[in-house]
Amino acid sequence: MEPITLMIMYLLIGLFAGSMSGMFGIGGGSIRTPLLYAAGLPLLSAFGINLIVIPFSSLVGAISHRKNIDLRIARYVIIGGILGTVAGALLTGLIPTLLLAIIFVIVSIITVFGIYFDRILPEIAQKVNPSTKNIVGGTFFLNFLTIMRGGSGGSLFPPFLRMMKLNIRKAIATSLFATIFTAAAGATVFYSRGNIMFLPALWVTVGSIIGARIGSLMSLKTKPTWLEVGLSVFIVILAFAVLIKTIW
Image 1 (cartoon, helix red, strand yellow):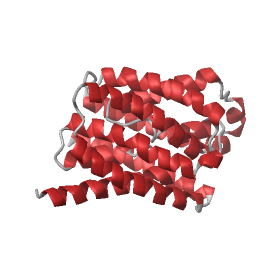
Image 2 (cartoon, rainbow, N blue to C red):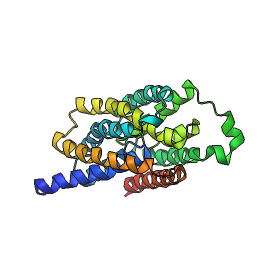
Image 3 (cartoon, one colour):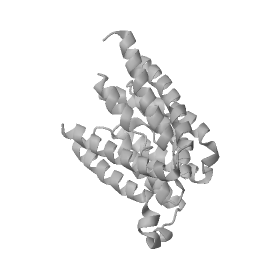
């Protein structure tokens, strides 16, 4: 494939994933990784490039959403997320891919349920304690699971934070802020292994930064109810896409 064609393709991949990141507060890896792999990059390189890109695109999104970031919650998300990221990155490849995909689908459905938890089961939701232990433990598990498929945990952070009693706008903003640090930790591991291809990473990063800004502006103008519905549908589609791709 011609270099100019590859450059445009990487830009478009970054633009699409970045816009979804800014819109819903996700890391974007659930989109970027399979698209980069489909574009012909080795899987571990797709993982590494995705993790290199996320801190930049999430930073742009976090700046746009800065008024809604809950810094008290964010520090616990970062601690749990970084620990889970490093542990999962070191174990990448040891767990069978199909088993990982099945677990991911189950966890995705559970976390989507968390978006509406306070309305479906209000009495139980009131008893949920957004304690340091629960936030650190939950984000550790989510990142440990998602890093082994090249993600940052960002796709599952917003619904988890909704369960921890943040409103949807705060959940999106806090997720974007936290994934700056959790993805950087994972990128360090993949960089040390030599999995980063810098030219594709550059173009994907440029596209993702532009997309993150566009998605963030759209998010701020969208009603919270539609953000919840869109995030729910998006996560379920991504989860089953991962499963179908694994089986295929």
